Image 1: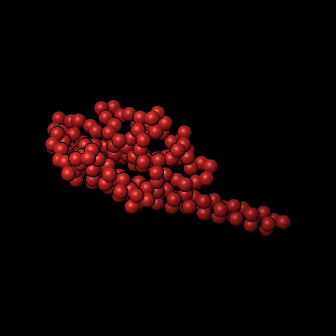
Image 2: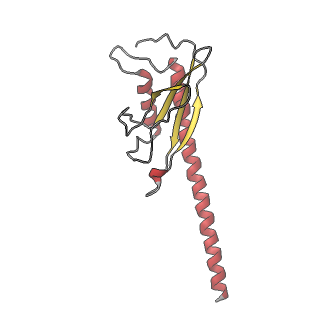
Image 3: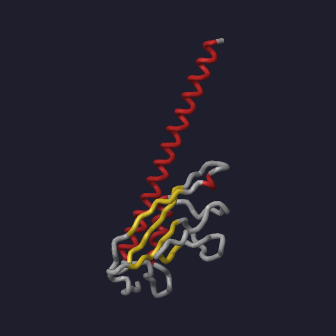
Length: 162
């Protein structure tokens, strides 16, 4: 009987170890994807010199390219959950993409936020991508932000139409 109790303890210890290692693996994969998304968004904004670049038909070129990149990466669409919020307002920033999905302020396809900041030399953008976990029952409660900023953009007032 003593050996059965000892074996049960070892099996439980092994299951806890496997659970912790699995959680670390899933977390690192999700962080890697969110980090890649954040970097692609920053690269696209810097490439066009700002967020407000439109074609002659009124399509936002930057947003279209970002959403094409996110579709290629496999970033998840906006989760229709009351627990996952929109972009939070930050001091000194203007939300240019994001907003609260439940308040009707925007109809976003992907869950990321873009903020515009102003400093002495020009403008820069802050980007927040989110780590998502597809875990049944608790996946809608989990959302962790990954933040980044563009370099200062000096020519934000000059917009080119394609």
